[in-house]
Image (cartoon, rainbow, N blue to C red; front, side, top):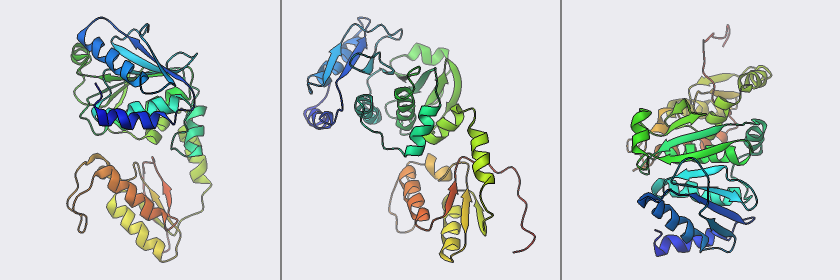
Length: 298
C-alpha cells in the first residue's frame, strides 16, 4: 500500500508520537476491507508505538479509527486516506498521541470550550484540494472534545450513499446526519459555525475597540493592499472581512499577479496576511458588514 519512500518518511514522522496509539479497523470482508487492513498493518509495522487491531465495532465498514491506547477512537477514516488526505492521516496519528497542533492558544481554547457531543462526517475525494483543511479541522475538534467523533468518508468507497444523500460536491460536511456546510472552510470558520455564543463574543470584542482612522471592508488582494498603504502612513488601520483572502482562497492556480509566475490561492492568501500583519493592521475575520455609515469628518 505504501511505497518505499512514503514508508521511510512516515517512519521518521512516527518518531514524534507522544504516547502509544492504536489503529482499530472495522472490516466487512470486502476487497476494500483488505486494502484498509493492509494499510493499518503497514503503519503499525513502522513503529513500536503503534499497534493494529482488526476487531473494531464502528457501524461504517470498512473504516479504521485512531486512538490512544486504552481509549475509544474518535477520529475515523472510512476509506484510504491517500492522495491529498495523507497529510490528514499523519496529523491524526500525531495529534491523537498528544502532539501539539500548530494553532494559536486562543483557537485551541475555543476548540476545548465548544464542549461538543456530536458525530461529524465529511465526504471527500482524494483529488480534492480543499478537503484536507476540513478533515483536519474536524479531527482536531474531535480530539479535544471527548464526546465527539469525526469521520472522513471517501465517496469512492461509499458510492451508493453518495447518490442517496445527493452529494454533488466535496467537501460536504454533516453534523449528526444534518448537512451543515460544504466547500472550503477554515478551522476558524468551522469553530464559529459550531460555537453558539461566537456572535456575542465577537460583538463584545468589536464594541471594545476604538474607532479606526481607516477601516477597510473586504480582505481580498485589493483590501489588503489598501490597508498596507494606509498603515504605512502611521495611521490606525483595520480590515473587516467575511473571509480573509476572499475568493483567492478558492483558487488553486494563480498566474495573473505580476512577478508571481505561479502560486496557489491559499498559499498566496497566507503570504498576504503575513505582509499585512507586518504593519500591525487589526484584522477582524469572519465578520460580514451589514451596513456602512461614513464618518462626518475626514
